Length: 286
Image 1 (spheres, helix red, strand yellow):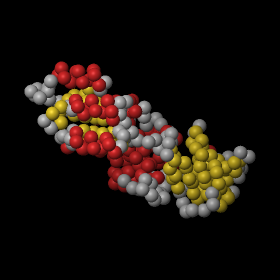
Image 2 (cartoon, rainbow, N blue to C red; image 1 turned 90 degrees about the vertical axis):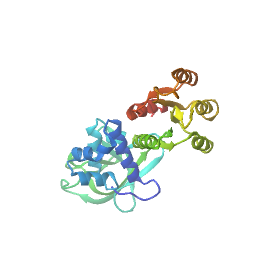
Image 3 (spheres, rainbow, N blue to C red; image 1 turned 180 degrees about the vertical axis):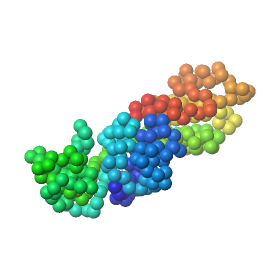
Image 4 (cartoon, rainbow, N blue to C red; image 1 turned 60 degrees about the horizontal axis):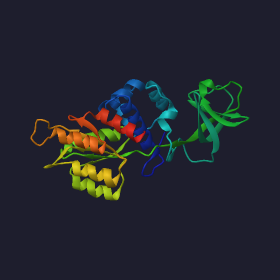
């Protein structure tokens, strides 16, 4: 399975989908290559190469999805933004149904030679049926059916628009680590290290959610939260991080008032990234 180029290639979309799948099911991003090696019976280097720009087969993607109790359709198909995955060179193609279990994926297929014997060393074949072409696993192909080799498959994949999340923390490593984790979970997260940088960004784009540290520099983030709630994006999800209860800079009653007044979710540091990702997923309905 090869990329056809572009700023957001199909291969990039597949890799992001696989990373997101494993992260959703509790696999740490640092363990993704090890987990893929285990699922596909590969060496670590082979798995790492696939996850970082290598080619995929349909069977490999199906195996990964099924390992986590999902299917190829749930791995690849979302509600928006069509993307095309291609196998093989450009030739004239026909519409077909790609059948995976009980699921049918619309696709276009370029046919190769007709097969007159049971296919060997072929994962999928194209069947000519009264209702049109169907792509099926070769071991499920009826013996006397009219069937063809497949030179190219184009699957219309719809990638959901990733929710945009702003992570605001004046501790750069903390902000960067949480940003990276959320991106691995399928969000489009951006780290900011002070309120001024976020205020500028809010003028240029809309964020679906915010994760904001209570103490930013020498002041609290209350005014920033108020600004978001009253003008920037009143419906955005806001998660407030605190971690200095033993400090004179931390006033518990102030935090409680902000949580109540501005309808924010409260989390103590050290940051629990999976919980934050779950809260954002619930709030953003993704």
